[in-house]
Image (spheres, helix red, strand yellow):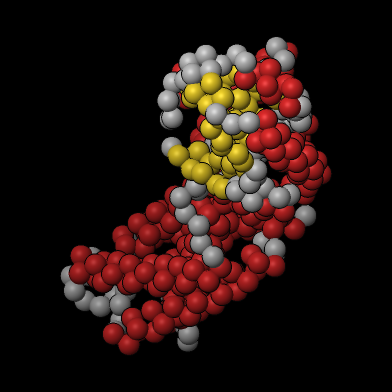
Length: 395
C-alpha cells in the first residue's frame, strides 16, 4: 500500500507540472512554461525507459526525481521563492536527492564494472564533490538564463549573496548524504533498493547470460563425452547452480610426466603420463619408458578453476571463499569487460628428469618426487572438499 501511495503522489506531481506549463503559456511566461514542460519530460523519463529498454526504475527514485524537479518549478510558478528560506530549503532537498542518485549510481557501477572500485570513504568524498559540482552547474545555468531571457536583469540570480548561500546549501546536502549514504551501505540500510536496482542491471547484461548459456551447453556435452575431471565436477556443478557465475575451465590438480622439444615449447609437448590421483613409483617408471626425444619434465599442477561472474561484488565474494578454503594464489582478472575469478592453490612442482629418452636421476630421487607429489595430491583433495562446502556461503 505504501508503494502505491508514493507512486500516486509521483503521478499527481507530474500532472501538476503539465498543468503549470499550460498555465504559464496562458500567462505568456515563456521561461517557466519551458521549465515546466522540460521538467515534465524529465519526470516521465523513468516510464519511457521502462517501456523502451525494459528496465524498471525503482518507485522511490521515480518519486525523488519528480519531487526534486517540482520543488524549483513550484518556487517559480507559484512565487514560493518569496517565502523565507524556501529557496535554501529547496536547494538543500534537491541537492540531497541529486547526491542520493549519485550514491545509487556509484554503487551500481562499483558492483558491475570490472574497472572501477571505491571504498566507502572515497564513495562519500565523490558524492560530496559531485553534488557541489551539480550546484555550480545549476548556478551557471541560472546566470545564463538571466543573460539570455532577462537581458542581464537579475531574475534567477538575485545577488551574489543569494548564489553563495545556494552553493553552501548544495555542499551541505552533498556532504551529509555522502557520509550517511556510505554508512547506510555498510549497514545494509538500502538493501531492498539496491537489490532491486541490481536485478534490473543484470537484465541489461545480456552478453554475460549469452556466454553463460553457451558455456553450460559446452559443459553438458563435455560431461556426456566424459572429458570433465570427475574430482572437479562437484565443485563445477555447485558453482554453475549459482545464476551469477559459470565455470569456463577446471582441473582438480594433477601429476604429469611431459616430454617437450625444449623448455617453453609446450604446444608440441607429449604426455607420457597424466594422473588426477596419487601414483606409484612403478607407474611413473613405466611412463618414463615411453620417452624418446625431447626434455622430460615431472610436474605437479595445482587445482585450478576459472569462474566468470557478472559483477565485481560477486567476484570479491568468490575470492574470499577461495582464500578461506586454502586457495591462496586465487585472484580476480578482467579483460574485454569480462570478470573472471581464478581459483588457484599453491601446490606445484616443475622438475626436469632427463632428455631424449635418457633419465638423469636415480630411483631414490624419483621415489622422493612421488612421495612429495602424493602428499600434495592429498592436500589438494582436502582443499577441494573445503571449497565445495564453503561455496554454500554464496547461496
